[in-house]
Length: 112
Length: 115
Image: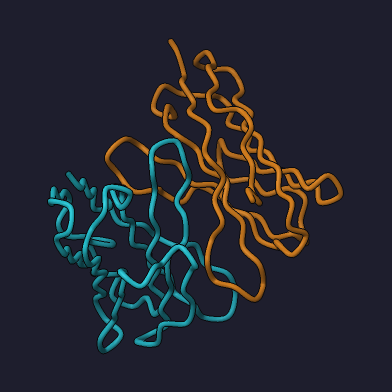
């Protein structure tokens, strides 16, 4: 039972353009969401998070949007840079649990 | 502080052997997590410690798996009688559990190959 879903296994975007990565969840108890970036042979690195009481959080080139009614969140990267090429994981957490539930990831390729 | 450290980075073992991995969390972090990641999947939760207490274990963690965190510092994950299905990346993460939400910081992982 995949509670956090990333339906696009890969995405290719030109440098300078916007990258939009999507994530859907099924568990309505999730109230905190995070995005992690992962390079090959490294552990995931925290990128940005959002609480369910907000619908947007911004940090530099990265913005996360949350649509609770649709159980959907998205990560926007603008402008995209070649160094952003990595696998991006969406993760979710409930108020009563400390563990993270991850999606299967989206591989982003930023081309020149 | 150098972040979360895991040892070894790679381990190749024969089926049936026991293996042990070590994780050193960020020093002031009281929460420590173990995850497992297989190809094409996201990390899957295995177990979680707050200080030295193991507070949650996933049903993925069979009887062959055991984790400890003596004195609430480093942690070890042991797999007994390894099977080929245990081949995966084992990730450790730590966080500072103090009131509000804080993100978990991951180590580089230990890649286990069971032959």
